[in-house]
Image (cartoon, rainbow, N blue to C red; front, side):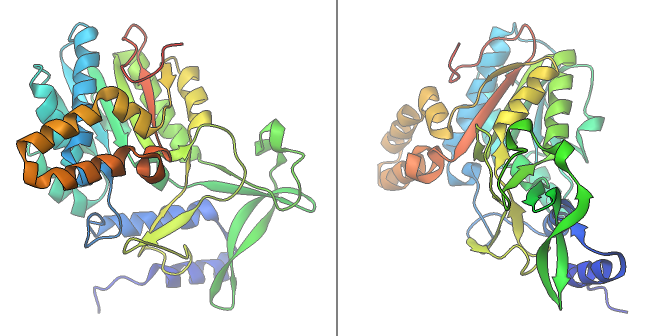
Length: 353
């Protein structure tokens, strides 16, 4: 018997033929679970590159921000650094190195389900402790939580305005090809009031999974103390339309083309997540663009210092700075949402109301 797993596309086809269309959220969740379980998707030889892999500046500035927050909160101990979906461990390594200069040397906890990525993370940060989800994180210490490009890979539920009302967007089959279908179950009650009168064909996205993660983060911060930075691409106002996309070998591909073989993501609805966080008792400090936040923290000065130290790499350093912070690259599309426990300071880089 072969050890090669059945292609996920075939599994989906059998499931749909036997039980009917499946939700888009189901399709996305299973696809990403298969995708991340067996590979390192990062870097030039992978499918995409994240900010920590572009330059050490990204992780260093996050580490300095966390150290500043911790110091101004009177340096509570014990304290834990928690990262959600830590990639190769690059961000944690850079952030912890920078934070240690200010005597912040926290216990390290990684929330990661992929065995392949856990191996790389263990090499980068040997003392890290691993968790399959947030439920098993320690509950007896302040938490410094970071999630970079974590929320975008969580499954989204799409609702479409059909002729007879709002329905969930499903995945069905036309022969062997996956197609979108409107489900039979009325979903009007799940639609925000401002969208209920939307025109036929209007699509809106929600992510119960992202909402659950942010609620858990906020609840823990409120009970234990600490702060969180959630960095991802997305929007800060309610929007209609499908944002789901798939990336393979640094190119956008059809999400239905090879489930389990491409990274499927959707834009993060930061507007809704901010409301959820506040409802669970934490301070929402704001959601500036990544470019605004990095510039406020001094990425320009840090880039110049690196260029002076290694003049032969000046062009590369400045290119990395621009890729992270320029509006026409990652600077505008990516956002940074900041959360703080009651009694914790307002973080630098977030506008004080």
